[in-house]
Image 1: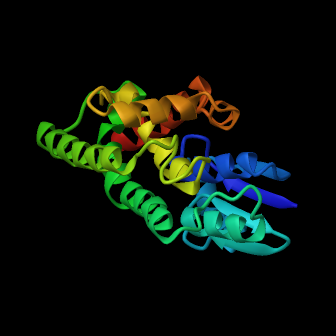
Image 2 (image 1 turned 30 degrees about the horizontal axis):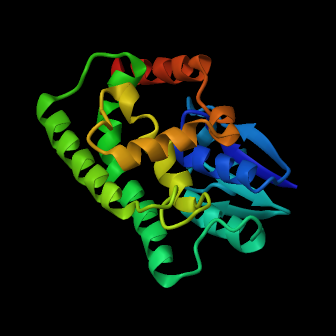
Length: 217
């Protein structure tokens, strides 16, 4: 049995959760509350860097979400979620890595807005807005006549980028200048896997409490 240790507010966790659902796999979902549970000795045994998500498969522990996605794709290749063509595969990988290395760090600048808290440093916000715009323009150029990045079917590029791009409008980042990307997002958010993994208001409030507690320390 596969076991996913996750936090519902985490896009890193969500991308694995969505992949498990899209592949139709049976798995157990174990929530790790990031108010300190991630530092408990039992969890550090399977995640020595105290990060989530972690996938446990018959005693084999896989950390780092991109490694988990590769593991699932290799072990459970149906439905295929990576293109075989070299150019298409490169596009999918670029989308994944640009999301992780460029888009997600910039998006975290808007975490206060997402949680309904006072905004952050205006200079940092302006810099993040520029970085996000650069990424969105790049993604727009990568989308072609096909409904997904380099594929007619959902890929791991969607799983990674879609869990970040889908929340941008909620923090005031409009996708109206990117019609192909906006239509791509619309296709994703109606999928059952996206709706099933959407952070609940309770999860958002719980995370907000943790953030506020850390701000006043």
